[in-house]
Image (cartoon, rainbow, N blue to C red):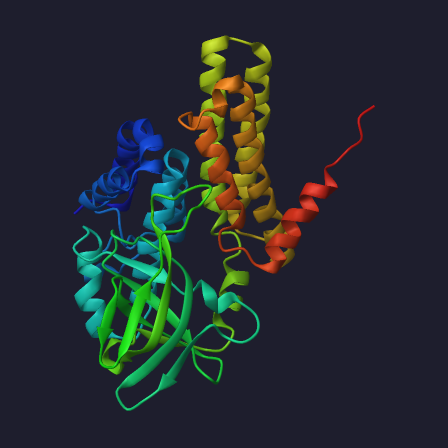
Length: 359
């Protein structure tokens, strides 16, 4: 079995040599995305934080985030899809259900079991839009999951539904229209998105669907996802860093073609800023407000580096087939991924604080 270091090296080689050259195709074609995704599975670069007792390399947090950043550098769509499966694996690994852990985790690395997630709705304030009611058999789920990614790719997804006392129950459900035990799951049409459409994101509608007691992975306390978001405020920012690096790759390619010194100067400045931000992200230090500022900085860098890729590529960047166009749209997604009100506020404050009049 390969060490985490060997897996990271193999993953970067695969992403650079195979995924990068076909990133635009991956962005627009689900079949190309499935091929790229299978390549990660073949290298066993999935469920990277599963414990060693289930065959896992048990990546450290830093190793895992390094890999996530690298995937985002070469393909936003692949990064977006694979993180659903990685998150499901982490949730199962931390869960209380030993049968699910034993059955799922060993098969999640190579793609025998592909599992997405569907619990972002737990972040929404107010009345829950997906509720769970306890029964003798388990939990009956009714309501809406507004975002589930991987239709036609994932076999199942980990759902999160709110109980009447504020807690949330989690477990795997089929990622296909299902009628069973007097309940149903039905999926809407694939959403038309400005970026990362190939991962096939849909809504799920549940009506009295039974999540059996033996399939419950974990029950989280009230406010869990909000607390988790504040603790892990930096983690989604590594995708923004990868996107920023992807933008700078385009800037450097433009310089190599045009040999204009000002392009290299721009790359040098943005590269130095990106490395500084990355060091702060890796250190993870400071209080919540400090971490929010670093997350906003990473988001800002993704947008500016992607924009620099557009500017340095000239009119060619307006083609939907140009890498700069794709990365610019990916920056949009990584701006709002796992966004909370405090992250939105920090992002907008940073964007408005740096405005200066001309003259």
